Amino acid sequence: VGGFTWSASGLPPGLGVNDSTIVGTPTTAGDFAVTVTATDDDGRTGTKTLGLKVHPSLVATPISEVTAAGRVTGSLAGTQAAGDGLVETITEVSSGGKPRDRYDLVDHTWTVPVPVGSVTLKVVGSWIDAGDRDTGATVEWSDGTTWTLLGTLTDDPTTLTSNPFVPGVTEILVRVTDNDRTSGQNSNDSVAIDLIELTGDGVVPPPAITTTSLPTAVVGSAYSAELSASGGTTPYTWAVTEGSSLPNGLTLGTSGTISGTPIATGGFTFFVTVTDFDGATASKELSISVVTSQAMTATIVTSTTGGRDKYGVATVTVTDGSGAAVAGASVTISWTGDFSGDQDQTLSTGSDGTVTFTTTTTQRRPSFSACVVSVTRVSYTYLPGGEAC
Image 1 (cartoon, rainbow, N blue to C red):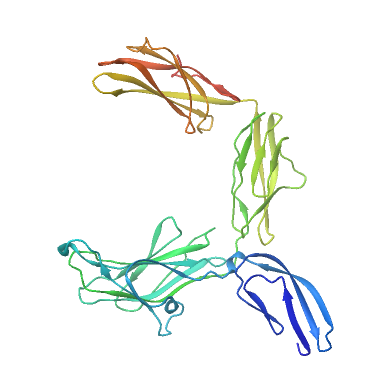
Image 2 (image 1 turned 30 degrees about the vertical axis):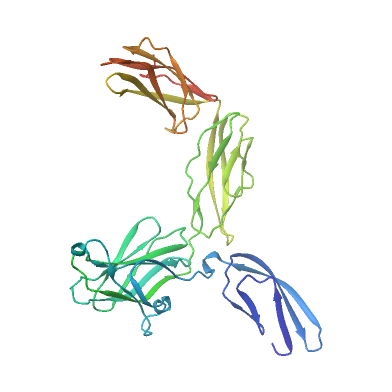
């Protein structure tokens, strides 16, 4: 605007003012209160504070290199546009080892930021055979857990595309490797990458609460359960839906953790609401059962240990009604058969719900068994089964 000089404070990192325009590439997501000031030719000023939201998926995160094996010529800039005459070339290097076993290989990885919405991955490149008739290069992508085939680059320039499903992932890996690692394949073949591109349609799916059930709570015992959601834009904020309530003694934190110590038994139904970064919401009905105690069961397995003379061994596993391990349970067992002279033993289960007992005496060829005398833990009731004495 002519006749005015503009300035702004409180801008996100990476942004600035150029004449009357806010320009740049933001590097930090969040909500920002930006105060804009206009100064006229006489020095008079006017200010106004405006809200500016930087979406996490729009924060600048460039493609980066994760090298493994290969000699690089050109640069990462060569992968940013197809047909511009710029490429990044990775040439095979020797595997090492005994001369007769050596082969040349290429193994190169890039990190690519994930944009907003449903995405399309595009890789353009070609394989340059140096004369050993290698069959090309494989291109794969990964969300950090498993690798998925995108396609094969051959002598002719090839365009490979895919639509990775990568919910909740901020970046993916793209990797190119040679297809033939046979001993004697020692010509320095190369792969030329003209483009690595991951684009999004900008459509963010709405948030959805994915928690389907919550663990049982016990009166007077500490309780903790995590809620989960998908879609929308993280971070999420959680709350009990207005007009609904949790069991007395429990609260829901904004990060999605239900915690506390319930004070009354019963079945409690309530609604929770998740709000994403952009203000989109989703609600769901959930329930928690609060009981005086939980049921627990035990199993026992016997074995032996030692050399010529052997000790008896008994391993007890304690679980609750859902099959989860019960830690800190006090277990007493009794030995029978050749080890009946051993006294009853009492030990506590570890974090995995198991505890191992060993006899104090040995036998050459022991014939024995063991049974559970008791299992005790605060807020739990032991339900004896076939393992009980």
